Length: 233
Image 1 (tube, rainbow, N blue to C red):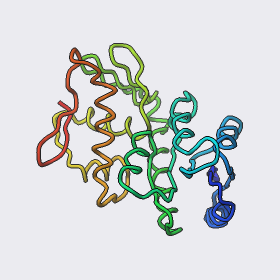
Image 2: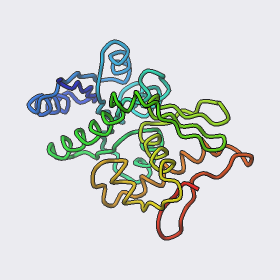
Image 3: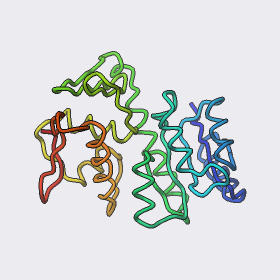
């Protein structure tokens, strides 16, 4: 089935370039020049992945992504930032808000296509029918993770996680006590080589800790193994 991509950018020539290359690769492309238009489209049409510019007139890309992640229907929708903001702080902000990948302009078409396929592959693997039928749950102390329903609760209270946050938490919890290096986690959760971007893992771990280790009465679930990486206690 043809995958549908929503490309959001205020520069028409970039949208045309994206549409030309993506459609040539077999995707259906929907274009939006503003954040408002993008959110309106997402309410009306089925989209498999969003390519999102940061600097948009009106609602910027960060706010668009925040609203996607706050929407119960759209919150697991894969989003890739395509932006000229290439500094480390901007990348960290984009990841903290919940983007699944971050690609700095100018970028190569082949790299973009590879990243789209990798993100979609990871997304699709989590909606496998057999997996959904298992209703697999992990329950540890106050924490409950339901992979089939993609839900997380702490003391019975739902916790909102981004797509990658959920994948990272599930992997660590499923393999309690096993130490994963940052490179291991990048390979297994992000699904492709992310050399030089291990800060991505640190950001997502930090976000998870804030969400599931909410106060001193909660156990410390994710532990840092100095000089190596992380493990689930």
